Image: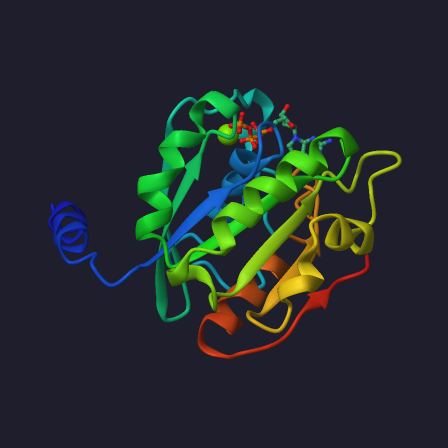
Length: 204
Ligand SMILES: Nc1nc2c(ncn2[C@@H]2O[C@H](COP(=O)(O)OP(=O)(O)OP(=O)(O)O)[C@@H](O)[C@H]2O)c(=O)[nH]1
Ligand SMILES: [Mg+2]
């Protein structure tokens, strides 16, 4: 009974969260990364806890619409919107991007053919006035794949250097298959929501 009342209370008072849009073109790994974030940023989870691979990753389907997650870090609550990246679904991004304080961009490092589309979509987002100075975390995902593109090339292909002075940016190599790099990425983002650091490319 107490936990029910506590749950309702928390739901009603869940107002001061940071709103984050988790975006990227189709199949880049957004929803898979979100499954890891749900485990890492579970309420009261110790910051460096060793976690198991989420079983939900066995049955990932393309997102039609969105997934929403409420996450917790020390001192912050996060509301994350994970939106489908298929071309036909991208018009839905608009209203969430408008509300978001931060964008996390996910790139499929194993599919060079999608990099141009990824760069073009990212460029459209980051010029929005309310995001111009907002920290930008880019997950260079699928680094476990043979011949994955390295984060430096991804940074160049996305043309990140051209506005590196405007916002703190981090290209974080990761794998939603193993979980590697995901916690480091979100830790960078949380640190930079308060601070102001420059371009950082993490070489695995
Ligand atoms: N090897 C490998 N596969 C991955 C990784 N991340 C995701 N995948 C696989 O890539 C496919 C797409 O992953 P999703 O997480 O559904 O991608 P998404 O970006 O949410 O896709 P949409 O919802 O369609 O936009 C799935 O088959 C995942 O299992 C990764 O880091 N490594
Ligand atoms: Mg998805």
